[in-house]
Length: 380
Image 1 (cartoon, rainbow, N blue to C red):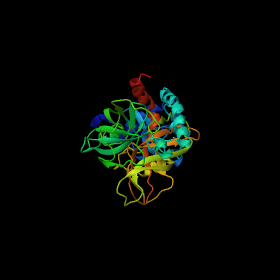
Image 2 (tube, rainbow, N blue to C red):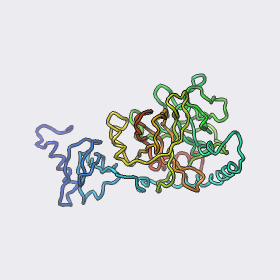
Image 3 (cartoon, rainbow, N blue to C red):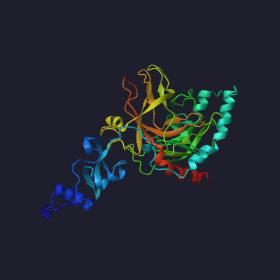
Image 4 (cartoon, helix red, strand yellow):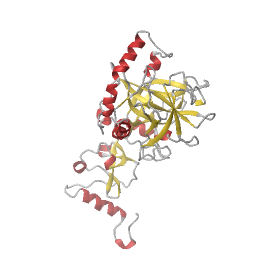
């Protein structure tokens, strides 16, 4: 252990016991020392499975002083405990950090116009080729990289205000493509992913990205805190085919859960298209099973920051080409605007027989950060 002298007379193991005793000096019991690294699997109280996490990052540590969960190691003076793995999706999992309610108010302010647009569609009135299907996903954005004639459309995003797109931090500057440069709004199922496909910088739905703001704790090479805001150089005018998505504020998730990804409906299809799939939220144990140290999550899936979801009715002939930055949403019955609960960050494979879950960044955890930026710019 770094920092110990040979003649100190105190072994590293003894040091852990002493520090552990310090933390529990006012109680009769001392926690078991597991001597495991942060992120390693462990066996918690009662034999339940867990992951070694900092006490400050464990979403459900229980009563730390009374229950004495096993301690894996220490990081400085902070114990790394055996944090229990969740066995289900609970309301509390999505109610960890609430924002200032500005996002909810912004959503409420745009509900009336959304209802009017939906009424026009249901009455048979549609403009610019809009259909109920395209209207349902009018918040979708595709991100462009480079300049013509080498413009490439790759990551996804969503419109959250008239000047901001929400996407993944890994989409801000993907390797080999350079920084995110363009946002193509009003994306429908007819748009195709790829190079110079169905969009150019002369199209009024293609808007320049002037600033890319990744979450401060995001680091290249890992996908923790995989969330970013892209500011547009001009405001978006909301219409029947273009509108915002609401942001999840941490309350109970109810309603049909869907995700929009870029894929091929058949393996031999030429161009990827936008596919909307019904999703099922997975427990964290399934998440952990697909994230060995070789993945972008070397410390495992941190349940307070992310969650997993799988396609409800999996079709092995359908191939996912691009998920990064795409939304997973709840469409509550009677609500006009969809509510985004997560941002797609990682999926193990793109095409195959196994229905691997996708890992999503949990929006509710980052809502204060989002609100502090986007509504400051809008002076709301």
